[in-house]
Length: 145
Length: 145
Image: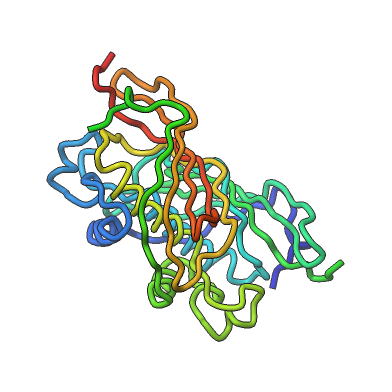
């Protein structure tokens, strides 16, 4: 298990692969973000998107799934404080395959039990970032203060 | 329909009501954020959370549902650029009822067809903000430049 002490600025990782289907995009959007350019292929075709695109919150949630599977699962995480500078740069479209790239930006004290790590997260489609954010995540200290 | 010209800094709205169940919290987390404090009531009881809490991305997605239903549905929105300062301040727990409060922080030009509106969004449980963020949303101009 990786603890707070194991993170250092500059560490990078690339991982994950997930291909999203049109039916998943529509199902998520019908539940959480029912705007026509997410839910209705015919209406979406008439918008600047030119077709159905995923809700930005779906893109974020799919990114989280890859982060949990490949980045957080072997760590002593205490949860996240939040996210800065979340940007949806390009839409996620049916059939796109996403992967994730992370870079540790900063580490610092938080409590006797945990430290705060700021991680730049890029969600990529064919090496191009479609979503970027800076996540603020708490990790348990191996040796509490 | 409300357009970019209809937004002014200082405008506030409060709306929505949605009660989240434990099964929904677990179902979302199994799909997108399978960490034990989101998916496993017994394991979660042993953590500082004291029980299952919603994934932060679930809280954000439920907030989006209320925003679409009550805020965006009667507007000419062109989608969102992103979010700043997203903070999960308190966990969302089974049985909690959320509502939303918005305040327009800033408006400015974006393109001939759209303007950019920065909206402070608070997700509330019993009047207390459990999640806050600043959303950057594009709205179509009533009269394109």
